[in-house]
Length: 286
Image 1 (cartoon, helix red, strand yellow):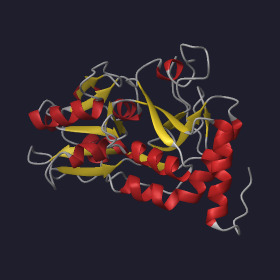
Image 2 (cartoon, rainbow, N blue to C red):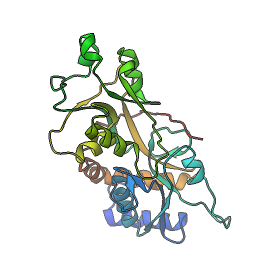
Image 3 (tube, helix red, strand yellow):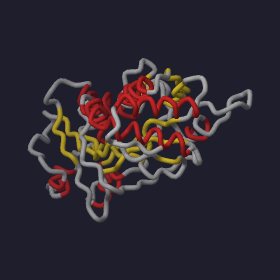
Image 4 (cartoon, rainbow, N blue to C red):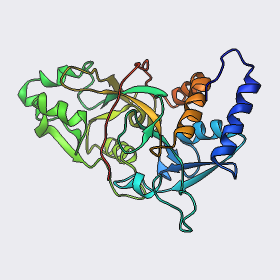
């Protein structure tokens, strides 16, 4: 559905509501989400994805309805692509945050772009670090004292390897399988307890850790992409392949609400970068 930018806002919203009626007869905005995944989504609706879903549903005159499932391997298969038990329709229709170009879903246009961040706990002998490259050039004796979170996949681990710091990594799983703590929550706890002194985290996760601690508890250094390692990515919304009408609807909502979307995301302290025109990313699930 093409929207004439000269039309009054009320007419544009009326058009979106009409389109929504064609997509979902019972006026539900059906979201697939993790119930305990701050800062993205929570069952208490405190995540930024919850707030963006509420914004869209309000404009469509719909009610948000969640299908909750921990975001682990198989999440897309068991939510977005899973039919209801009665065989009528699917459990949910929208995943609020997936990498742009994600191959398991059709993706909307990106609605924000962020980067990984190196978080360094202050007061543990690393307060002189202001650039990530300094870690690789530290004297060997000092390097041996590093305790850096290392994930089973991700650019941070690749960077540690290329920087000769892999032995200083403390291993973590990207998907913990823990129903009470997501990765960001576990990293926050371990940083406080001294299990690790630093971590390279995706922007929203880094923002969550910062929000749970007193101001100035960490040095926060945005990671810069290089030809060898990419740290910045665009995030879109995911729908089922072939659900073109819903994709068009969401794209229109994103275009109309981008400043407010960025205001919501920015209120969580998440680093925002300009959205490139084309920045596809892939990820794995099954």
